[in-house]
Image 1 (cartoon, rainbow, N blue to C red):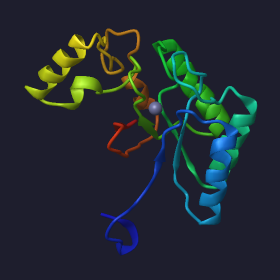
Image 2 (tube, rainbow, N blue to C red):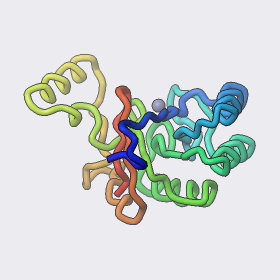
Image 3 (cartoon, protein in one colour):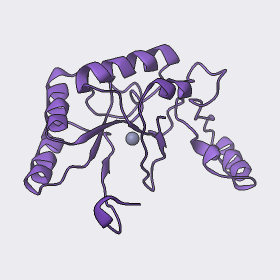
Length: 180
Ligand SMILES: [Zn+2]
């Protein structure tokens, strides 16, 4: 399964929430010094909700992300931004991602309660756990989310991946989905 006869692989996927140059630059300098090349997610657009963090539309941050991409770090998607984005914005965001990074993202990890998340929320579970999860969320007053895979939703973007290349990864706190 693993190349060169290795018995396992280890990787790190960096959630981009709360990124500013001052808190990420030292981390990537250290990883570079240690010879480690990990996966770093990025938002294309600035947050539209209560989350904080820079995006690729910030020119200094975009240069930082491009620089670490050149050094061999894998740049991934953490939705095109934090908050609500419709299909047109998501598709345009993919083009901006390619313009800035040089290729489309090969890995996507869902972010928090973004409505454009893929197979997230209760969809992570099978019945009856999925029903229980949905009921508890409704009782907490949380609206349903994870509409990126629902064809009638304005947040639907799942089929975008048919024009992109492949991907895969997972972490306990995120669902990462192959984009093809
Ligand atoms: Zn996040």
